[in-house]
Length: 401
Image (tube, rainbow, N blue to C red; front, side):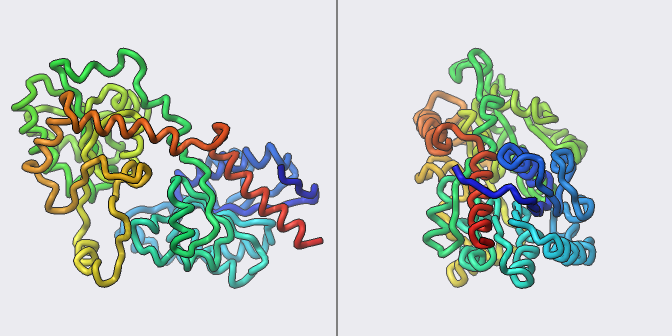
């Protein structure tokens, strides 16, 4: 175990959205268990981090915006907050700076801190998806990130190959809450039963719903002709509920719109198959043992980039589906852009709703994920992340002697 001095310490943490706030709060609690209470935690964080004793330079809601339009509308304020954060970190002279996810904000802070105060160690928590988009980011990160904490087990090898920073797999939060969405005995009826339960997950953003829900609706209508007792569950985020209700009003099978994490997990425990947008949800489905098809439609801008991909090499992965990448083989079918249509989707979803070879192949493959994603000795994510931060503090102590 690392040993560090008992001098007063300052640890700066910078996050940009709710998921980072959760990771940050758990990391603070893990560090308090090692360092005690004589540490100042400051930077940019949300309510969970504040509850753990963190002091934020400003309200995180100023920068926690999603979507190009929202970002552009608030761009002057976001730029101001970047420079305010940099000034605050440099003035605090922390023993370590930890940036968590939200790379458009946090990495801009880290680059400027590195230039103004190169002696401050910088830890990145959550790797950008360099394995899928813009692999050239990896070597650029190594200039201003000393240690990188990765949530996916294949990311250390990716960064080593691409020339990125030293990377440590610290586990994914999903693996620690897998019991919430994995069915207990009797919760998921046998797939041989007449009643079929299908999860439809068109995404949490308006742009995703706009591009996918109509094709999903046509697919559901065709499935209903095959399966009389088809039940459709559609987990939704609160701000999208009314919009989705309008869009599904004429579906022949009215989906049950599911709200809240607990109800979503219950839906996962009941589902026989899923039709979903690309994203972290594919990992949740796999760990829940739900066979799936994954779909993604790029917006007009990224479609143009995709057309140029052979020239500028933006996409480097052979799959955009996380379970496929972790398993090292493409067991989950994925459909991109014009491939997302009922003619392609319906026969395969129908297959997954029966005791088919395709269904069995996915479920068997998903059984390997626990082994691939769990940390040695079943350590929790926050403890593994804190271990790396403690190593940085120990190095900092040695450099000051």
